[in-house]
Length: 408
Ligand code: PLP
Image 1 (cartoon, helix red, strand yellow):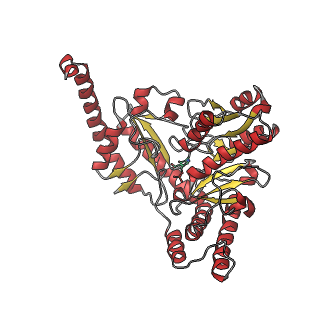
Image 2 (cartoon, helix red, strand yellow):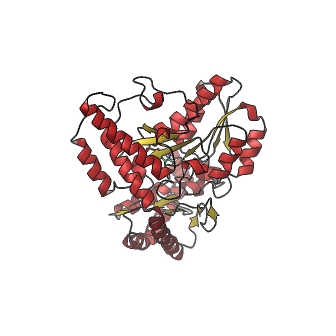
Image 3 (cartoon, rainbow, N blue to C red):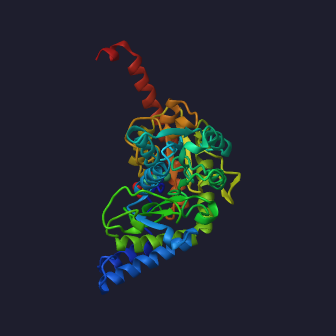
């Protein structure tokens, strides 16, 4: 099998799996006062320290959650509610047009149910939010902005945003800035204190940790109204008994992913460049989407090192995906969370792609288990697969245009 879908989920690191299974045979509620509880609490607090040190945060800024989706919802809704409670005039939520649905739909839910006014910040052809776009949006009425959320790196096309500049623009107006760094951790240098964000989202299964666990890094002075109420765990921001084994494994994964980041990023970027070359040699019509990856951004690359995203004119992404899958090659037509829905990606549309071209797109994403053999397998398969998907597309088009077909 050739797995080219690490942005959807990446295999758990052996060290994290060992930490998880080791911790599963222990027990204890981290809120209990007896010895078992204190043992569990110690494991949680040590994990908190490891994650904080790896990501340039203070331990008290680490809020454990059930993953990226919950962290995004907590940041967007919680900070909105807290800011509006302080001042009812703060109703505007500014998010980039290319956010993951966990941010986008949380913001749109606030518009439908809580009186928020959502502005989708435009992106350029690479999918990047520019600082002057954000500045202009804030300038319309700075006092009415509740929060801004712009992802660190896009999960579909891999484009990296100028997070420090965006955070600084928000800070100049005292506006909280959240960034979804789910795809950035372990791929780019991420330092919470240095980037100036108020809140930052981390997901376990994207960094070689377990599913169903994540973190919201939340600045000490950032007010956030809880979404769920209960035992008051995690600074009273996120109630619920902590999943100690998952947290211990997450800390192991974050520690290793950040320690090995530079070396792994260089290896994956070289593999990714090879993959792009191979596809282009075989298919001159293939369009590479996103940043070409040459310029630097906040001390790191301008495209995620493991990301290659193409559109194949005349093809349907779903056909390409299934034909590749039949050859043992797994990739994605876009964000895994929206795959299966026959809609062009909102990210590609926001970047200005025509809907038909957007529908014929594939994301190949590399990770810690990727090898040159994976790239070779794709190189051998991609030409015939695109050829077949294109003929199927043309046949479908002919059928749709023929009057006989229209009658049935
Ligand atoms: N944010 C981004 C950028 C993602 O890529 C994903 C997963 O696809 C999420 C959030 C959701 O994270 P989780 O799967 O941990 O809920």
